[in-house]
Length: 522
Image (cartoon, rainbow, N blue to C red; front, top):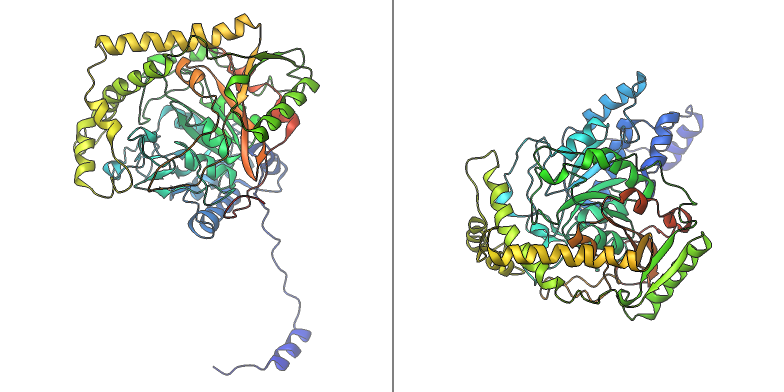
């Protein structure tokens, strides 16, 4: 082909009519679902384009560029579904606040379509159940676009004490978008990193103890663990029916409240949710910048660690809460009388893991595949890729436990519930006459190390609400050398609306955009 000289090309350009260029695509980075909904309602953005924008961002940031490994896969049908939702909007049908909003699911939550639900394990790589978990069905009915599945700590981090959070045999290692060599915490690692990096405005995580709140804190986003029994666990790969729950991971508390309004509710297949329909409310209704006015806040001072930089962030947050009208009440010894809680919780988790996993696996539609925890242990031994980085000592310990009628389990279950609830959170709130408990969610993200596993040493506020089954909210509080730190709000059973309405995040606005750097800030 004959080439045109630069001089000739320049001459052609001067006489050719101007070509109309398409307008630039609207940015989605850092935009919460409420903002995106406003843009779609006003007509400056439409549903199907929004889904395409996030798919493009996943390709550029998750699959290429920083390669976060936060998203395992996206559903092939999402753009078609988004177009249908746009058609509904265009015809005047609006399903609610989530209409047309993409949302990602942690890959231990089942959803209809071509993607398996793996819990990060090769043992479930073909686990396409083609059924929606009830919480997913509720999201679809509300108009949300189920975008895809996120990576997680394999088996929700219950396989080994030597594991690296955010790693799974299916998805690899998820990176923290604030510092790529740092950990995401877990087990809802991919959900947290994806929301922080604006790969979707919303995600669903699951928690047994810290698996929503820790990765939310470490990745600088909002995470909410609701009261156990407010959201159905049906068709979610389990650990413990005493402590498991799903919950939203978002950029704002308002978005978390909107998601909770949709996914909360009773499910006949999950007895724990019997009261959910009577307890659920519109969680966005109580949100107000003045929500802390007149509230008494119990400060879990003995649970914040001894780092001066974190203490300074925490004290600044408390100062802002008092400026918003709250009264701060110091609690010097919140651990008193709870010395046996950890051992009791661990006994419960091991026994329930064995029983609940067998129930889930036996209920899968496929006739082949693992049906018991013993089958998973055997699979891992036969597949070196599963045990490449860490063992399955917790699986093996759980397999050695008796059934749910064993005296050791029954005693531990009753003790754990009593210590964390009536003698833990309930006692602390009553003795100090407070409306909510406040603590530090997490320390700075540690460097990921597949050889040696996690080496997290920071504070944590997750155990009491996790074991009690009470609500726990974390919101961004600031950063230490560019690494996000969260502040936790904890309430009594069924006080989810009050915890979400704590009000601090609406005034503080401490969330920052990730930098995708390697290493910490100078």
